[in-house]
Amino acid sequence: MKIAVACDHAGFPLKEIVLEAVRQEGHEPIDLGTFSTESVDYPDYAEKVGRAIQSGQAERGILLCGSGVGASIAANKMKGVYAAICHDTYTAHQGVEHDDMNVLCLGGRVIGPELAREIVQAFLRARFTGHDPGGERHARRVGKIRRLEEL
Image (tube, rainbow, N blue to C red; front, top):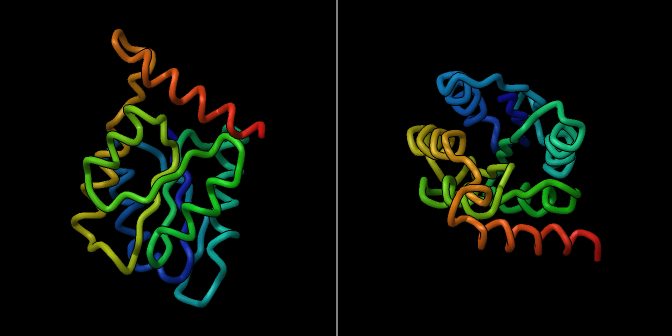
């Protein structure tokens, strides 16, 4: 899979760790910046990841900002982008399996490098179960979420 990765200045210290974790899982990261700790605005980088997903350039994305919250809010404004902040492995895989999450948001000031690696692994290894036998309830719920985008 191609994975779009972007961050603001507060997420920058974790970005290289995330890029390496993506590579170690056998995926191709697309580095959309930022490239330093100079102050930038997280919505700009959330948009870059969202556009990569919308265009099909990337199948999933990972966003980093200070807390992960701002990046998550910004990314979720974009149609077809389903972002969530995850600071544990359970929510990272369950968000994909049950909710078809396609963007992982991490707080660079909240979690450390080892936990970030494990969360990225859980996110990338997970697959949406809505099309599996017994997964109809997940597909139904995700369908309702998709319809909310049209309101």
